[in-house]
Length: 164
Image (cartoon, rainbow, N blue to C red):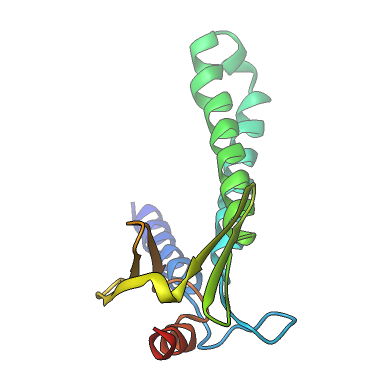
């Protein structure tokens, strides 16, 4: 009983440390041309690690002989974690490739596998800041949201406010 409580407490502590690390950001992010960017810094690696752990559970359950006796066991205990790991890997790649670059009076957002999206700051009709995000609204009713977990947020928002 005591062992279970200690392991549970250590698991909660480890989870809180991982979540804190995933929200680590820097004030300024700069690309190779000297333009300010915002990007996810630690989060893609954390999600990739979750995908690896889920894949390990699925493979481990696949090699358990008792799971092959009943097809329902194999589906739930092996195939589902493997499917979750594939989604984790794809999402980790997606947010690893996410970049929003501020060039002159444009914000260029590049996301894999989608084509780049450009927003002209002259078309910005409002800029709102809430506790968890910063929202730019443009004339064509599209919105660009910058969440607190994105690295380079502080100086990017300051420069955007100056250029609006």
